[in-house]
Structure formats: structure tokens, C-alpha cells
Amino acid sequence: MKYPNGQRRKNVSFPKTQSFSNRGMSLEEDINSTNQYYLDTDKAIIHKKPTPVQIVKVNYPKRSAAVITEAYFKQASTTDYNGLYRNKYIDFEAKETRNKTSFPLANIHEHQINHMESIVNHGGICFLIIRFTQLDETYFLPATYLFKYWYEKEKDGRKSIPYEKIKQHGYHLPFHYQARVDYLAIIDKFYF
Amino acid sequence: MKYPNGQRRKNVSFPKTQSFSNRGMSLEEDINSTNQYYLDTDKAIIHKKPTPVQIVKVNYPKRSAAVITEAYFKQASTTDYNGLYRNKYIDFEAKETRNKTSFPLANIHEHQINHMESIVNHGGICFLIIRFTQLDETYFLPATYLFKYWYEKEKDGRKSIPYEKIKQHGYHLPFHYQARVDYLAIIDKFYF
Image 1 (cartoon, each protein chain N blue to C red):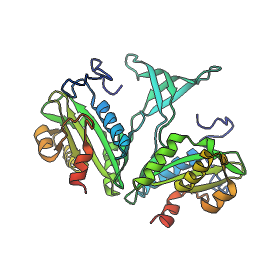
Image 2: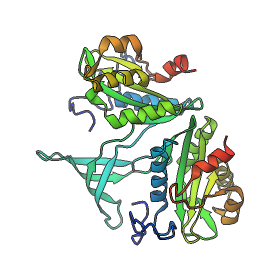
Image 3: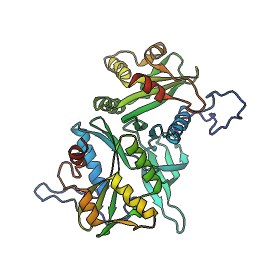
Image 4: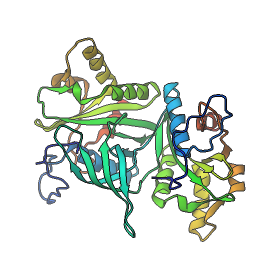
């Protein structure tokens, strides 16, 4: 649902001899796979929250599972991912953009910014994972840097964060086979 | 969905002169209201995770919101609530029982126990909120105490935690108007 590009292949398994790239995999799939690897190796407990849905009608057929027959997508009031790593509360949002020169702030909602600010104020580790799909590059951007651009936008500043600034103030997340988006490596390096 | 008792009243607003009791309110509603109070007063950021749903069919009518027309409830692999308080990761599950003498362990799934153990091992604060609806009493039970009974059950022990033990090893959560299930008061007292 979140990635309207119907051409993106899902659950592709690469032959083991092929060189690995994240092409064809959505950022969400890569992060879910990374979180599963962190769970399996008992490194961190980080999950994607379920998609918020407003359930209107449910049928309870005899001898089979309840079927939801009418429901609507709700806007998330927080971020998509949270969890626990090295005694710390972790909270982040992941976004893909097809833009090659900047990350449009329209990808983020104001209530998400409010949420992320609260997280930072209460001692959590909060960030954004941004993938430039056309460049096949993924970055870890600390939330505080996102706030700076958000406030500038509020004061009639620019409505996006330039790619060059993300490169400069964020951290590149190289593709690894086991932890495809190894954001904990960045946390280890810069938050402890 | 979670509270099959159709007679339970929802969103009841009491006249301000009436004495307050939590009768008629589900534990989930009381906790959601408590979490909202914590958010509003900037005390903690704790949310209920959305109900996990497997979406099968979605209609996209012209000029109106997407409608989910076929979906199924999925079993949660973690707990219902998590968040951040005083730099600490908070994680808990809330359960009501109509049983008056014990809390049946059938209310908890094994993967939830595994999740809760990981949380404790990685430095999170993890617990259960149990309401005995017939007694109108609510308790905070540390996860470690739940584990003890779970392991005994695994070794052919009893399949429930006696009410008296919960009273003895848990902490009673009295009903307050603003924070109806004020579990942070217990955390302040016993975890810091």
C-alpha cells in the first residue's frame, strides 16, 4: 500500500552467486529483513508497527476466521518503527523518494515531527532512514537535523532537504547481505 | 474486537458531579485514556500498537478513500503497548479476566513471553496490567513474575496465576480520574 509503484518486485530471492544489490526490494522490505536479523541474533528488538486501520464491518462466518469486510486506512500519528537496543529506546521513520536532488518534506507529517521531538526530549534515539531510489543510496539522518529543516520550512523556507546536505550531515548506509540497512552500526558509532 | 462482551458501554462520559468508577469502561479504553493524559502532560510517550490486520483486497473508488474489502485479524507477535518514559523503553500487555480467583495463562501466547523476555534482557521495563473485571481491581505485574509462572506451567504446573499471588507480588492500580490506570506511578516507585 505504501509503495504505489506496482512494478516493484516483492519477495525476490536472489541466487546466491549473484552480486547483491537492493534493487527490486523496497526500503520497507529491507528494514523488515534487517530487523528480523537483529531479532534472530538477539541484537535488538525493533518492529514495524502494523498499518493503522479503522475497522467498520466484520463478518463472523461459522467455523472459519472472522473476515473484515469494510475498513479504511488511517494516518499514523507516530513513526513506523520502534524498539529497544542497548537499553535505549529507538524510534524512526523510513521514506523512499524518487527525487534525485532532495528529500521533499511533504513526506513527513507535522504530528510525526511532534512525536519525534518528544522522543528526543525524553531520551530516545530518533532518526529518519531515507532512500533515494533512483540513486540506490540510503541514508541515516538524525531527527534533530530533520527538525532544523522543518522549522525553516515553517518560516517559508525551502520545502525539501538537499541531497548534498543529507550526504554531509547524515550517514550513508551501505547495503549488506545480512543486515541490508544496518542502522545499528551508525547508532553504535555516534550515540554511545 | 478484543472485548467480545457486547454489553460494555463505549465512550461513556460521566457527569462531573458523579463519583468516578471504571465500571463500564474496558481496560483498553482506560489505558488509552491514561496514555493520552501522559502525552498531554508530556510525561511519557506510550501508544497502543494498531491491531495487526492482513489486508487482502482494497478498492480504490474515484474521488474517495480506499476501502479495504477483505482483511483478516493476525495474531500479534509482540505486546500491545510500548513507548518511552524517563529515558527508558516501556513495554506491556493488558488483559482482562472475568475469573475471580486467578489469571489464566491461556491469555498470553508463547511468542509474547519470548518477546517480553528479550525486552527484560535488553534493559526495558516490561510488565502486565491485569484487570479482574468481576472484582473491579487492576494490578501491575512485573514480567519476571509472569515468567516464573509460565515456566512452572511448562513443567506441568498450574495453568494460572492465583489472584492472591498477584495481590502479593503485583501492585494494585487504584482508579484515578486523570490517569485511570496510573502505571507510571508504580514504575517511579519500583524501577528508579
